[in-house]
Amino acid sequence: MLKSAPIAGAFPDLLVGNESSDDAAVYRLNDTQALVATTDFFAPIVDDPYDFGRISATNALSDIYAMGARPILALALLGVPLGKLPVEAVRAIVAGGESVCAAVGIPIGGGHSVDVPEPMYGLVALGLIHPSRVKRNDQARAGDVLILGKGLGIGIMGAALKKGELRDKAYRQMLETATQLNTPGLKLAEMEGVHALTDVTGFGLLGHLLELCQGAGLEAKLEFDRIPILSAARYLVEAGYATGASERNWTSCQHAVSLPAQWPQWRRKILTDPQTSGGLLVACDADTAPAVLALFRQEGFKQAVVVGTLERGQPAVRFV
Image: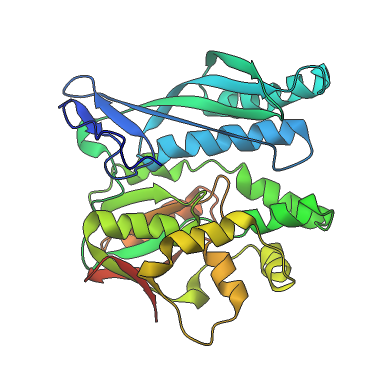
C-alpha cells in the first residue's frame, strides 16, 4: 500500500527516513544532536487496562532505544469507544502508560484522543542522540554475529489469552517480557563494533531480520536451537495456538527464507510470531559480541543470546 509513498530524500538533515523501513525517523538538529521520532499504538492485547497501557508505552519507546537514542518526551494517542468503556478503565490505560514514562524519567506532554469502535492506546515518542551514534537497521557487515535480546512468543501467548487458555504464571511471564524496556540500546549506541540495530515487533523475527539483510545486502544463517523462546509459548504453539498475523508475515517473507523440508509447522509459527514490545536484534562483530551479551545480562535480559551470523550473499535467511 505504501510503495507509491515518496522517499524523503530531498531533506539532507533527515538522516533516517522511510527508505529502509527503520524503527524511527532521525532528523539532525545540529552537529551534536539529532531528534529521533516514532509513534506506535494498538488495540488491547490483555484484559487489564493498566497492563495494556504499560505494554503499549513500552512498545512505543522501544523504537527510540532501537535507534540507540535516549527518550526525552512522549505524547499520548488514545482511542475510546465513547459510552461503551468505563471512565475508570480509560484512566487506568493512561495511568499505565504514564507509569512507564515516569520510570524512564520523561513526561507525557499532551496528546490526542478520538472516538473509535474499540480502545486504542500508544505514544508518539521522541529521543535525542549524537548524529554519529545513530544505529540504523541497514548497516550490518559480513561476518557480524546476530544477538537477540528477548525470547519469542508474545503473539502466541496473546492468542491463548483471548481464548481463556493462558494460565496465571504464563500471563506473568508475558507481562514481564512485554513491559521490559529495551534500555541496552543506549549503551549499544556507544559500541563501535555494533553495526546495526532493530527491534523485533509486528513482523516477527523473520520479517525484521530480512529487513536487516536487505538493507545490508547480506544473508543470515540461523540456528533454530539457539533462538530463545518463552517457555509458555513453546508449549502453546505446539498445542496449535497462533495469530493470523503470523501467516501474513510468512506470506510476505517466505520468498527469501530457506527452511529445512521436514520442519514441524510450530517452528515456522514461532519465527513469524508478531511480537509486542519484542527484543532488540543486534548485528555486531564477533569481538564485540561478549560485551553486548554482558550488557544485556547487566540490564536483566536473561535470554539474550547469539542466534546466527551474517555472510555475503543474496538477502535471505537460511537455517543451518
